[in-house]
Length: 441
Image (cartoon, rainbow, N blue to C red):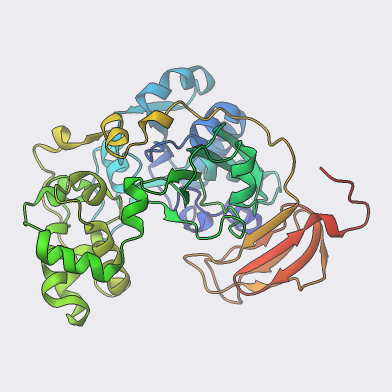
């Protein structure tokens, strides 16, 4: 069995956030393999922990992937402040220190920073001879090479909690369990995000949300924090405000990372067009929005009127998906270097700097008693359930498999043994206490 097939059978998805199936990436040749440890979302530390705590696995995986891809070079890209301690752990691998700016981990930005190459509009890194994989994905590749299934993920629990930490946890561990493990919230009214304040999504029910491979950060924020307030705005309200408050100042565009690389992404035009035409417009009218990555700088940093360009861009991207890719690639902006947003300044703007004290790696104090495994994969057709309510499952047992003929789906495996207490086309819930011999944590 080749490495790509082993990666698929293990159930490896990209752990950087998008959840792209890793085995698909590894079926193409590449000159350069970049291990993405940039981790630019404020308060995230799981890639930092993996690169420090699991160095031997990462080294083994990059060696195997280098051979699989035919790559001439492997580069680990990390923030400059983290590069020094890694030099000793990765003596045979090049470490590329990145400037402390957001979003250094965006694929197009990362490829340009590390190699000087620019992906085509609507293109991907292999188009310029590069494969980019998140640090946790690389770690999962190492385990897949030893025949291990993906049953755990690394997560930072941070923000307004008593004891921020980073840990390797069973897939499906609920956000509520992890927040309790962190000593609970330190503010009376709060929201919980899957991801960082810039690109994360609010979790409506932390007790029903199980962490996935794409979950790098469970973030607790005060109810009235800037990111939380923006997340609650209805789209129609955003449209109304766009018409009354957007001055077309272009600040959102002039600080857009993709625009500064020469891509045709102009949020200020999207705002004007969305207000003027709304949902009735031909999707072609909004074509430039398809190149947006939803990084959130326009909305949470650049806009002087405190309106929500990202919400508009995300909506338009949903309408455009698969039908209207952005076209054209101009020159990188001559002032790009001076317009990169420093991480420290961004944290202060978001009012999260007071929680920027790190999240040290540690083990969970006890294993979760209940798991909620997610079966929805962004780039695959619906999975086919392999278990039913009442079944008893063992760790590593498949609970869902890709549909016949689906080349992008990967299986989902039980992370702990227990009884299936609920199963549908979106989740499988496992209770460890409902099996013979359970004796507590």
